[in-house]
Amino acid sequence: MYRVMNPADRATQQMQGATSTMGSLQQKRDVKTTVPGHTAGGAIGGALGGAVAGAGVGSMMAAEGATGLMAGIGGPVPMLIGAGLGAAAYLFS
Image (cartoon, rainbow, N blue to C red):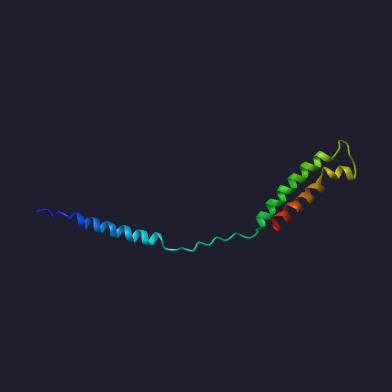
């Protein structure tokens, strides 16, 4: 009444499936990765990091009550230098 599958046929069928699976897994595939180029966002990030570092260094160098050129050391001068260095480091890396 009920069809009984031959175990040898079932084993052969399973082995054929495994063979085709292994064959597809062993195919050589060329995977190419490309390194993205420099972006404006990366340069801006480098500039901002350099500006913060420059401001920190400048604030440590400036003395209290300094005027003229010495007051500029704690102001925008080191920030601009740091921003330039940070952007240049990113772009030339």
